Length: 176
Length: 296
Image 1 (cartoon, rainbow over the protein chains, first blue to last red):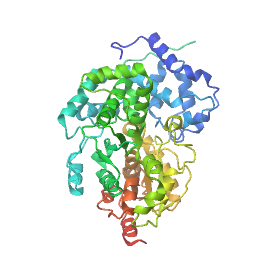
Image 2 (image 1 turned 90 degrees about the vertical axis):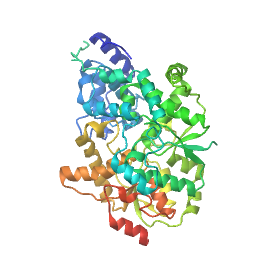
Image 3 (image 1 turned 30 degrees about the horizontal axis):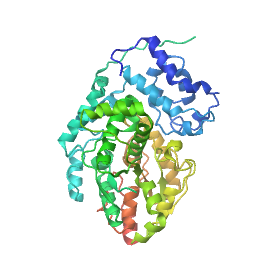
């Protein structure tokens, strides 16, 4: 994980590297035609990936977060471009530049605190007991020493630092 | 073939515990060798954590895999998201020596190591491949005379190159598992389409996410079915709790019961809807419960 926020040129180079495979794209639009999110939201996956190879603007584009990662585009691409995997890589570059939606930041904080992205609540504790299950599942919820391992592992990977990153004002460097 | 360890994930134990109960009851009744995987964490979820940081996604997945390796058991998931993360991480770490070394450097700090000795199974492909529908039929005590809309969910099938479960366009194995219980799997338009929850969309863009769910629910409603059956608690939550969220936003109420496959299997094996936690759903339809209990 990079310690400092990168310059726009470095950033653009990372985007280009992530999108190298998309140079094979012939703009046929099968990806957009197969996209269930695109039927209902602003997501135009063909245009998004095209933009990604040209400008850092893509990292601030809301469309980046409208993909449900269903993989239809990737399955049907006649040029065998791993479109969904490119989206995941673009998101990861954005997150490392501090671009993260508050709801996603919250989910990350829950993982750090509980070892679960969706932790138990009072209502479900009661439901579990009534069903005849242990009140707490036999996961990190039940074993504090395992939760400590998970936290140590996340810190070792720098996950805590990722959450502290402030969003950078991405200037939107473009190639000619 | 190795025995199994039960990986719970987050949504099943912490939001829909009935699915956990149904799984335990069904596995025991069918005498499948499966024990608890104690101390596991979030898989971690592919949509959010894989998107954000690959090294921590891999490391946490590797820890869960290592826990099961220590028991020399294959890991059993009940969730398409957990399956996606654990199967992909297992494959990546088995095949990429440098990523494996990096990941094991992190794991060494907590005294763990990824060795690459086990496989990751999803309950649907496990039951279909290892137990087979014709054998499951023998355990059925209450044949289900109902019409079912099967929802595969995305990450059970895709990316198909990695999953190896055949075509994602018109899969049939999940339908076979439903029909061996006596039920009819009803075809409907956009059957393999996404529920809209994945990729962090449900958590961050709820309104957009529900548009996809509503599309799916409206197609299913037109097919005149008794319930939806899924293979993933996140799809389950989106299609169940999502119905109420859609009602609040649009006034449209679908009122379709939603069951995880283990709950449908539990009904066929003779367990009551209450024992299987089917009444703990947001959407409750007494007509469905009566139909199951009265067999008509």
